[in-house]
Length: 75
Image (cartoon, rainbow, N blue to C red; front, side):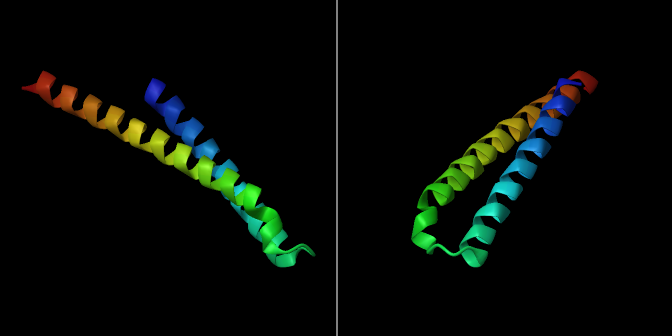
């Protein structure tokens, strides 16, 4: 059950990342400021994506570990 909660948390994190990315692109392409003004926003989105990827890798490793343990218990 803990794994399900972590998956739900990562899905929420992905939605936040998607929303932040869309907001940044919308501000750049539809705003009145130049793209240079959004370097900080791009950096923040990059950091969020990097953290999300690390969380996903950790979750995958956890899931594969559980799968290996299940196979060992069946044998």
